[in-house]
Length: 395
Image 1 (cartoon, one colour):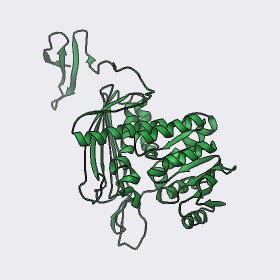
Image 2 (cartoon, rainbow, N blue to C red; image 1 turned 90 degrees about the vertical axis):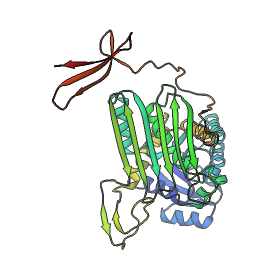
Image 3 (tube, rainbow, N blue to C red; image 1 turned 120 degrees about the vertical axis):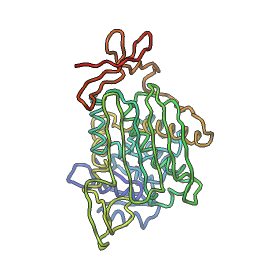
Image 4 (cartoon, rainbow, N blue to C red; image 1 turned 30 degrees about the horizontal axis):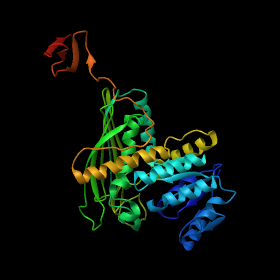
C-alpha cells in the first residue's frame, strides 16, 4: 500500500519512523507540507519520491492508496475533505476535530465517500493496553466499575498547540482525547457516555486554554471513566492507567518509569519524548515507536483497508471522544454535571444493565469474604429482605 503523508512536523516523523521501521509491503511515498522547504527536508530524510506544498496534488496522485494526516487540528477537516474528494482512505491523528461538530462533518465525509476513516489513537494500541484490554474482555477482572487514565508532561513541542484557535483547546483536547478513549475501551465502547463533571484551569502558562484538567465521565451502566491531564508536569511524560473491576484490578505504567534507567553526565542527545534533560538519572524507552502503539496501530489500519473491515479506532470513535470533550469544557464553565450530546449513537440502546450485587444464597448478598490475621475465615452478608448485615465465621 502506498501512503502519502500530510504534514512534516513532530508527529509526522513519529509516524514515518513507524512506517519505515522494518521491511514491509506498505510504503511511504510522498509528503505535503505548507512549507516547501520542510516538505523537501522530510522527503530527503525519508527518501520519498515526491513532495509538494499543494495538498490536493499530493492526495490525488494515482499512486496513492491511503493518506495519513499529521497536521494541526484546525487543518484536519480540510484534509479529510481533500481525501473524500479523491476517494482516498484516510488516517487522521488525534483529536479528530477541535470539537464534535467538526468531527461529525469529517465522519459524514468519509462515510459518504465510501472510504475508510481511521482514527490514529496510538495509546489504544500500546502492547500493554492491548493485553490489558484482552484480559478485561476475557472477564479476568469482572465488570469494569472505574477506569482512570493519566497523561501529564511539560507541554507540546509545536507552537500551534498553544494557540486556542488552531488547537481547539488546551491539554484537555490534546491529552484528554487519549485518556477518554482508553477508559472507553476498558468500560466498553458499546456503553453510552451519559454525562460529565470537569475541572479545568490555566495554572502556569500565559495562554487562553487550560493547562490542567480533571474529569469524570459517567456511563449508562454506572461505570466511571476518569482522566487527569496536565501540561505543567515536570520530569518527562507520565502515562498511567488503572482499571478496577468487580473481580480484579489492572495497573499500567506506560511511560516515564519504564524499567530502563540510565545515568549520564549529559554528553548524549535525545532520551525519550518529553524528556526534559539529558543528564542525571534518565528513563529511556527501548523501542519508543512500538511502546507508544504506532506499530500496532498502522498494522491494524492497513489490515482493515485490505480486508474491508473496520479498524479498532474509527472516525466514529473520534467523534464520540470529541463529544465527551465538548461536554467537559461546558462542565468546567458551569461547575455542573453536563450531558454528553451525541448525534446518531451506535451502541447499546438500554440503560438497564442490572445489578453488580453477588448472591451468597437465596436469602443473602455477599458483601465481603476475607482471611483474618489468625487464619480465621469470615463472610460479611446482607439479608435481601430485612437489610440486616451479619458476620459469619466459616471453616
